[in-house]
Image 1 (cartoon, rainbow, N blue to C red):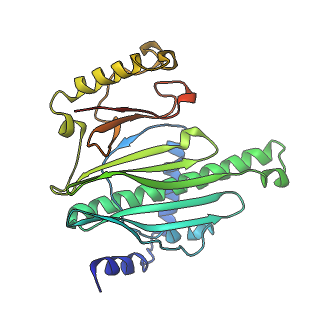
Image 2 (tube, one colour):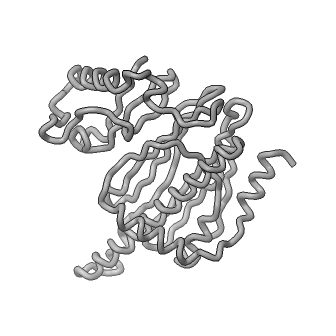
Length: 279
């Protein structure tokens, strides 16, 4: 049995934890605290496929998972980006779509990252479920009927996409979304240096003067856009500067692409705004 087959067997045979109830409650509590806020978390995560079914068994939401275990091309000699869980389910109130990635290999570094991303995905699905149940309760209590509620197309999704990969680096983004409100959409950017077992920062890619390099490029791109008026000015909460929490991914050319969520620096029609920062 090779490394991938062993990992796949382990992922598909999780042990049921005794702390199920506390995990469910903690996930929902976290969801309530985070509801209504938009933010981008800039960290470097990878994942193992732990047990979504365990977390939500008490909620009776989901059936047996279909383990995708679809292997994406090898990254270097150690890491592989895998889809370790992929499932679709409807419970009558919402449709759930989850595609969960993992990076296999890497020892303690990968294990730590695996635990981080599993926690993140658990929280986002719990948050989505809680938000939809609260929305349903409010809808029915204000005169809506069960028949009218059944016409709603509520969705909770967690998906990912690989932005770039080389022999030593991999960059991918996980997108989580609850269809009832934009406030529930979040992106998590993972930029890994698989040779040195560390996350990559804008400083690593652009040097010590990275803040000035980014700010200068972004302001030039805004000024040179077809319609600069769609961007908010500083008095309206528009772009001022990047910092350590600014989201970014690495594109195929090896350049960082700085990302701002919808309505943070420009009108909503612009959607998510991206700026490639060329080295």
